[in-house]
Amino acid sequence: MTAKYDHIGQGYNRTRKADPYLTERLISLLKPESGKYYLDVGCGTGNYTHALYNRGVHLTGIDPSEKMLTEARKKNNSIEWKKGSVEDLPFHDAVFNGAIATLTLHHWQNMVNGFAEIKRVLIPRSNLVIFTSSPKQMETYWLNHYFPQMMKTSTAQMPSLKKISACLEQSGFSQITTEKYFVQNDLQDLFLQSGKYKPAMYFDPQIRRGISSFAALSNAEEVQKGLDLLARDIESGKIQQIIDQYENQAGDYLFIRARS
Image (cartoon, rainbow, N blue to C red):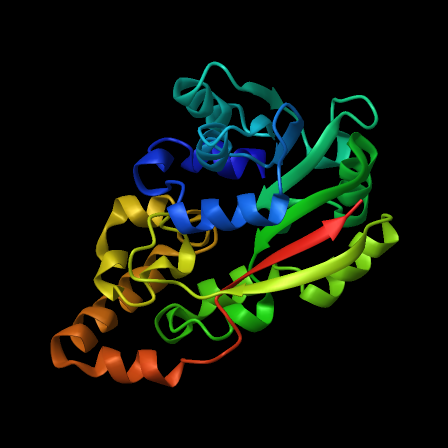
């Protein structure tokens, strides 16, 4: 994971920004209190760490990629940024009042150990808020039509909701709830499915570099072939038919909240 994000970290901030709606949902689910301390696990360049900090949430960000953390420090020197993995958090027991983990679960080496470490550093009865996508959801992305092998590889690395819930419970978390998220036209964080209704977005190489599926899990031949087909379908108008075929009620991403 470290090597992957050291590779794509440069320029990541140009396309990956904290989305206002997602920020609001993180805050609503986390329920932070003034004067208390929270943890952002797998914080990357700190987009959501910084956004929540600006809303009065005192956060520490931790990530295994030094390149990502270098970018995070440029954003805000008042936030404590730590290098480390979720399976071995460099903190004492029961020091945080809650935690967030956005689009990071699929990069963890061991989810049970990761959740156990988060529970260890959380004060009892604290909230952990996760933002992720499930394999079931990713199978409904129309990107599968244009980049089948990349999507197959990307989907395979995602833990299912069933597995996430089982690992949370095994690690001592309880009161697990979920909330579906459907991509909107005004989404500002340009992650994988962000172009759901803006397919031409994927022609921008800078945007693709900020998406780990394109940056680390694809091959150039398939990407070019897929982009060529996408261009033809946009020009002919067929793209709308493709998008409509993949419409569903599974949600594009998922918020998960659990209690320590």
